[in-house]
Image (cartoon, rainbow, N blue to C red):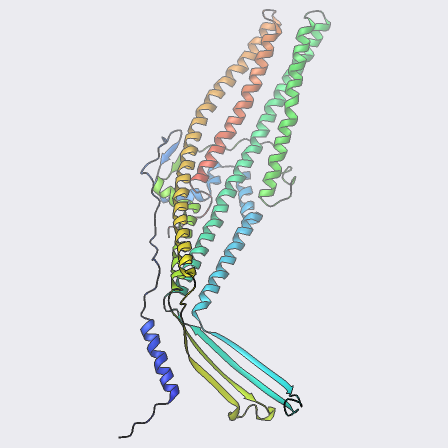
Length: 480
């Protein structure tokens, strides 16, 4: 019995299919990432006092996304909204999302075949001394296709890493929002604090100016000596010297605030020229349990996504240890006479698989695997450090907020007593019962306590904003 010889191109296709089905059964190399959660205590170490309460209600998370609304300051709320629309750092962070999305698209494209088109027309002449000396033409057009099969999941791992990178960049964008909204709030509080301090200084300046004028009249009438006049004068000028410093601080805070919301320095002076008060503190402030608070923070979520990306890149590196199978093919037309270009006899084609396997590279691939493994370990350490730093930030914010309210209460009582002391000292001096140094001390103390009270009221508001920031407030939290 005579056996027919199998055509060569059929044999090639059978070999190609055999290789494909055998090697496509290989598992995706590299470790599979398992989502980790923050290792945090059940409750906060700092006691929740002075209006701080523990809550797990969903409404609290919604309120935290726009914490400035809780301060009930319409000017601050308007500035925050304008910041989210116009801040340049936020726009830059958003463009990084677009960049990461495009990079993910590049990684995904490796799953698909590559198709190239080409065409050429050449005219050549051989040497008469080395050949015929005749001229010839050659025309060619065709399509080349190539497809590297993802047999061991290297491309899959690369896409996995790109997806994690994109998610991480999104959380970085949210982190910019958290920092930015907090920075706007802190600078706004600074503006109001400087205005309150200026108001107190100017009020004391007016009082001390009146005292100086009165002492000068009394001295001219021979009722008091010159010492009281000079004491009231240097007390007056010392208070006056504080005003330029406070005005400079106010101007700096306004300029910084203007830049944060995307305006040029000096463009907020008209809007904030009318002195307002420091935002009032809500009576009750809900604080999530540590586990929920940590999940709200975008920096922790970003660090977790960076760990996922680093883990996936171990698989990308390990895939280089294994063979690579590439399917190639081309079709086209070739002729030396352009009149025959489109005829069937001009057609050409080629097809077939190719396998490549790195046999020796002086351990470069394994070194790269070690690099990626080390980077994954670094990412895990960074994640844990981010969680620890976040816990520290919240604990410090809780303690500062509570302690500063105690300090503000004491300063309020001290200021109240200082106001009364000034009245008593001035009445006693006018009655000739005490010398002017007692009035001087009382006026100095009043200005000092009023200034410290204004600073403390601003610090309480600032500590609350820092607490909101530490809890991850300022961006839209989605439980997914």
